Amino acid sequence: MNKQQKSLIVLACGLFLFTLSVPVLNMALVTNDSLYSQQDLMYYLSQENQTEFAHYRTDNTWTYSKTCFPEVLIDVVDLDGVASVWFSYKRSNESQWNNQSMNPSGLGENTYFGSFQSTVSEYTTLFNITIFANDSLGHISESELYGLRVDYSYDPPPEPGLSDLFIPITVGTITVILFSAIVIIDKRTSKKTIISTSNLVDI
View 1: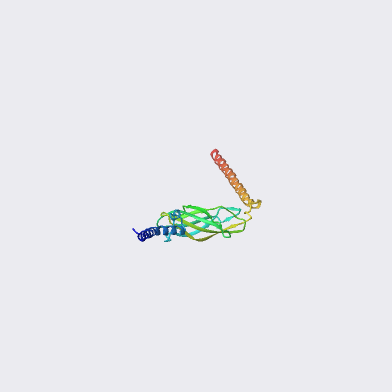
View 2: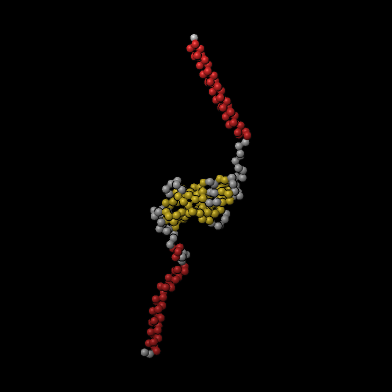
């Protein structure tokens, strides 16, 4: 085997090895460029948007205390079944999101409920809410951006004063007096009836 044949064999082997390595290189490039890890791909975003979010509402959004517990309710429906629901919340003027789980509320077959604790120092505090749902196949769906408003009053409701208690006490007193008077009159009437009856018997 001459030198030229050896060179051709080496070149052919190099081309063969390069051809085998191309798919591996492509896989590596795809993996590195992917936005999701293998663990994330187990819960990849739903491409069909089968999860439906409806009837979003809030409760317990009026408080006389700086610490409040706003409530979030929403109906979630998915043909594959709903495995879990949670929501993310933040103040509208902040960037940090916080997650809070949601549970079946008992108010409806598809209604989920969740609440979070917050400290407010203004008359009105606005929050941003986003709902997430994980179906039984592992698809995650995201709702639109919702709003939540907490109204805070510095002045608690007034305590009942003496003037507020005067009318109930007066009415109660008058009722007791009238009832006692009726009982006394009834007893006296009964005694007179007995005396009159006894006099008739003596005659």
